[in-house]
Image 1 (cartoon, rainbow, N blue to C red):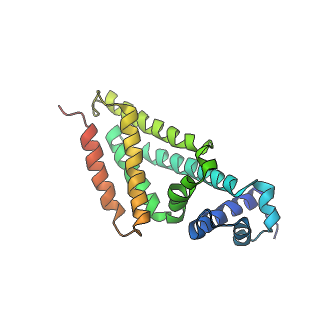
Image 2: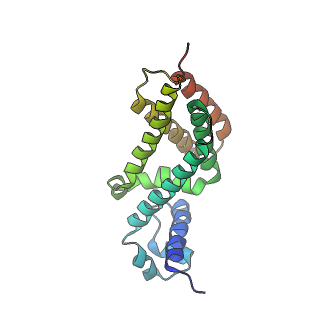
Image 3: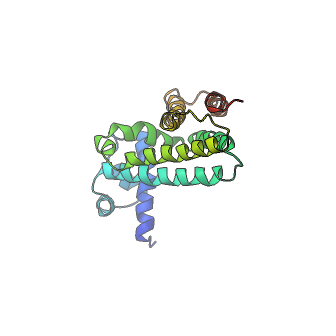
Length: 196
């Protein structure tokens, strides 16, 4: 079977997600990734210099895909509060439907010092900036408090979603993420809403 270069690279990345989630980033070996991907050990090094590079590429590409999808979905809503509600619901639904990727992005990636120093971290800042954009829109619509510190509020929302997802992973997924989403929506939107 002839696999194109881009497809082989993607196959390696997809296999790495599964291997990192199963064995943990530090316990996983490049040979495990190669075996899972059905390629020779040396083939992995044609695409990535180190195991850390694989991790960073997964984070950057998957995070961008997730953010693009979320904001495409959010864009159909009629006002800022509806957009924030949808953002919270979609993101926690994605956590539940992609537990391996969630574990990799929230737990495994953060243990790599190379990851912390990489450009991948700026993706989180970009995401918070997009949330700030929705909050600004809400202020212009008169729905969000004009005295709100947008940086603090957007960071709180991002951190709230990430915190719920992290606990869900660490506590063996034993609670309902839809109920958590509804609680977060009530708390966050209740706190930022512009009351008459």
